Picture 1 (tube, rainbow, N blue to C red):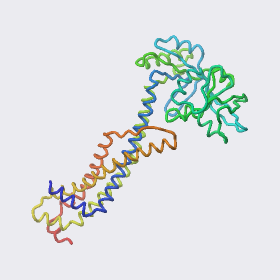
Picture 2 (cartoon, rainbow, N blue to C red):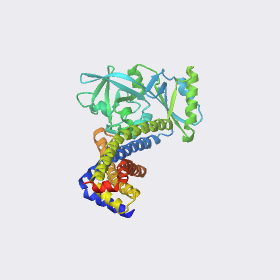
Picture 3 (cartoon, helix red, strand yellow):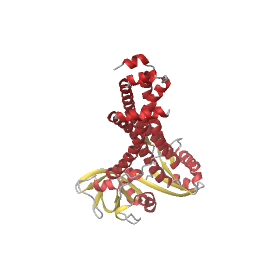
Picture 4 (cartoon, rainbow, N blue to C red):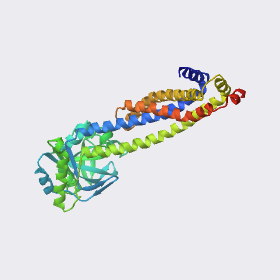
Length: 396
């Protein structure tokens, strides 16, 4: 076996250019798998880490929510809120109202989503995790004032909106007290495109007394799923429907996210696998050419007593070594590429997350490279092992 190993190394060295190209083919496929998996795990851990801070929160919507759809069924009532306050284990309740409104800034009109609620509780939901880059947050007596998301300030109008600028919301004038930082991965859609008002101002400007959303905090995280079921049952009884309320916990959100990320990873790995298929064809082509070039050598080996199994082992070792080197190079390149992707996402999209390069992914990448090498090299190796010594020696 040692002799076959040394002969394989010699063969690879003698064909440096061809071996290098074959190694690169494998490396690209493995790098794609490692990079995409590492980026996926990094994003998943970043979202999971942020969500677990809200493990005691239950988000209650008057809607039927299914994958890919949100069907609003109405609004909550004061009776719903009072009934939730009576449930054992409930620590506090926050209510919000929201709807789209026509917003005018310097003669430009844009429909923007307005969110109103109790200012202290809105602060704990949005301001604490995201932060303000300009101005200050709302107080309950800030009646004709608002705080705006980053996208509202910078993207929706031709001119950038700053603190102390004035907007018209459904014809009512409001002064801008603060501007949010970019929402990042978790809060981009919750903060960036919205305008925040006090509950009193929102109800007046939106001309509604409806409660659009209820946030419930519990004392004991271990009871959050049980309390969520009690919340749904209480509200559904009030409205005479089996599915009027949807109570979402961090656990249920993480479960859905886990399924989504598994699907995304599967698709991305499938795409990367195409590169490995191309690389495997390259390995087979390289090994077939090596067999053809060394036909005379194979004949001499068999003529002096080499067994077919030894010839088979020689070429399998050679293809495996090329693939293993490609796997190692691919893992290193994949880890570097993943870091570059995360930095690019941070710069271009404002999404910050740490790449998670799991040892299992690296080991798996090298194992896949080895398997590809063995499978791709088996046919050429088998062909070499079955050669007739007499015919092989005569081959020029």
